Image (cartoon, rainbow, N blue to C red; front, side, top):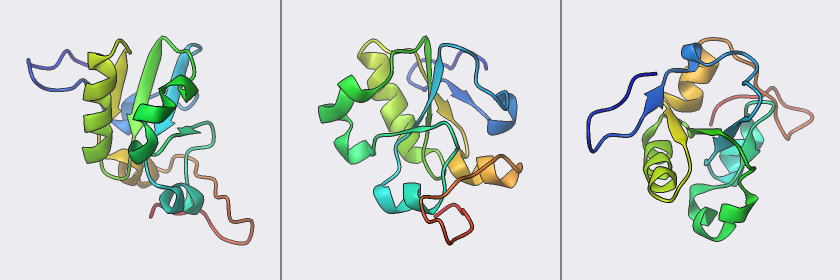
Length: 118
């Protein structure tokens, strides 16, 4: 990860993240409920972007918060918001599309279905 120019949020590509996040890190998935249910990273924490402001206390205490959505747009906005409010957050570039494309694990809340990125 490199330090971004002023006005840009810090970002990391999925392939730059270790398979198992380091101690003190959390993966925050800000997609909506239907997207989460279709498929998500096994150890992610789910707080939809639309609920973030009222659920800030639900973000686990962490040294580093990696924020992910489907393609990186919503998570970039959330990353900027979190960083402006005292968190150390990093946007996961290309989002869950990128996560899935490199073969990272997905789990689904649908016991009958194969997990996928919606």
